[in-house]
Image 1 (cartoon, rainbow, N blue to C red):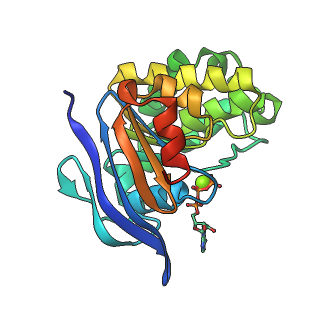
Image 2 (cartoon, protein in one colour):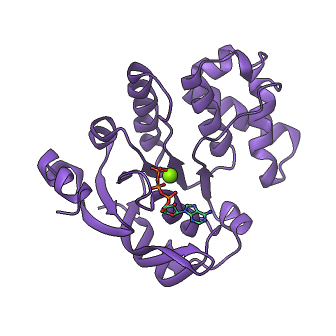
Length: 237
Ligand SMILES: Nc1ncnc2c1ncn2[C@@H]1O[C@H](COP(=O)(O)OP(=O)(O)OP(=O)(O)O)[C@@H](O)[C@H]1O
Ligand SMILES: [Mg+2]
């Protein structure tokens, strides 16, 4: 079994005095994908916000590489946690390459190191290399999503967190985005993927976790979870 990157146990979090996540647990291992599912408003994004330091953990724990995560959000990026937020937009008037370079800013690298990081992203997503000098606005929705992921990868994460990368994409493009995400596993990256595209995301997942009304209702190995189990977990048994 690979190394545990992220361990969330009994997480409680919300907005100010409002608790919306009451009891969420999940694990992400290096080189694996954990998919986090649940209906609209179940608390998926809120969970991600607590993991990345945008919302306060009010009970339970979030640990990364065996240590409690308590740093400010920007320090978590420096620790290797990159987050592509729901509905993330790229800078449409900048070129693909400029968008990627922006993603590397947080690392404070020199020009050469940045350039070589950009080349690595082009290896992962060849379409971005082909179109590097074009405005991001010229790309399709699926390609823009890959660019957003590429931008996050420029920070050289160990843990990549993606909130609904398939949102608003046509089914055939959803499949392609999932394939690209699946390929990223081979780099040793651990991925926490929030999705509404249940079948497509479970197909690439190692672990599945379902939230219903702020509580984990199912968690386990993707290979052992049936569609029936998922349906029950979704609708609270
Ligand atoms: N900024 C906020 N202030 C107060 N309540 C919020 C805020 N953002 C979300 N909520 C509430 O928290 C609950 C969980 O929302 P969250 O965005 O985590 O759901 P989600 O599972 O990501 O849903 P979706 O699939 O629609 O993205 C919802 O009831 C929502 O109304
Ligand atoms: Mg959400």
